[in-house]
Image (cartoon, rainbow, N blue to C red; front, top):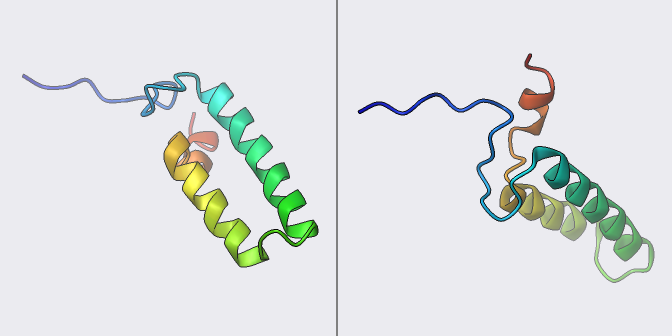
Length: 70
């Protein structure tokens, strides 16, 4: 039995099924990270690490490829 190929509209994340919602949540995480850095809660390096973790959890690791692929 073979699996059908996944398309960019399908989701690797069962808790947040919509790609648009995942992208929106990631945008909120970017703003929160910027505020946390501005107020000195975390360093810029830590902010980048947290954003990378958020992207991995949301399944946005290939966001650039998905955006540039028809």
